[in-house]
Length: 306
Image 1 (cartoon, rainbow, N blue to C red):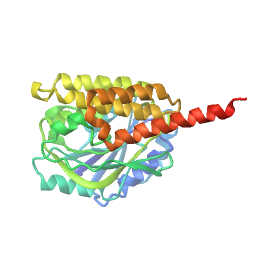
Image 2 (image 1 turned 120 degrees about the vertical axis):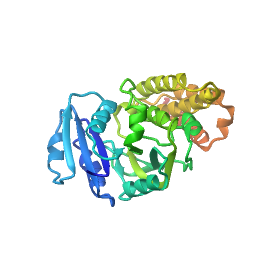
Image 3 (image 1 turned 180 degrees about the horizontal axis):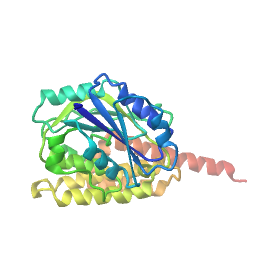
Image 4 (image 1 turned 90 degrees about the vertical axis):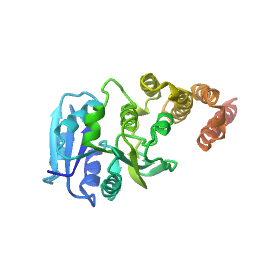
């Protein structure tokens, strides 16, 4: 039996899934099985996966159900004592699994390990880096405020931890990875690998890039999570909402149909929920971008006048 099972949900991913799979199969930790869950793809996803010859690779196809459902199919098929995930448009550094397996070995009580994330564009070029965080052990309070694991392509989870909290919530359109991590953190310590090992590709046209969809579903996830949080942790909801509105502002600033008015309202909401957030470098960076974009549009409109 393999030590680690890696689940790769893939929907219409013919352009990116070979790159994701190569990054997994090239890991320095080799005792793995890689389970591609074809989530009802209508393109050449199955064909390009079939061109990769590696005995560790398995493929299973299901009707389209979304990324959470696909990951759950993979968990059901996994044989390893540790289960990790990588979305079909992301990549890992070669040492990702080795370092996270070692972190869990050093912390036998931990239920999950995580690393830091680099955001890359469609071509794989670096755009930004996650602010380093150093949360270990009981991370529930920090995770309720901020999704520092960043995406579903990060965590490596013990099978026993899944058995204690259940699988991904398929009712959530986005933030299903954060919701699962909150349930894990409520029962299990987390282990940290303080390295940038996850390359998160920001693809235009994806559900997570649509600010309208993301705004609605992420807010629903927040309400669902805090409905089950103990009363002593409820005050953290305002801080979580502040960061949610800051993310909304950033998404409206970077969306294809950029909306400065909505970005401004989101920034105001973030400051209202947590006034101290205005001192945060991320808040200041998004605010500065909003201001410069608005000034640039005003200057351009004046130049176009007859």
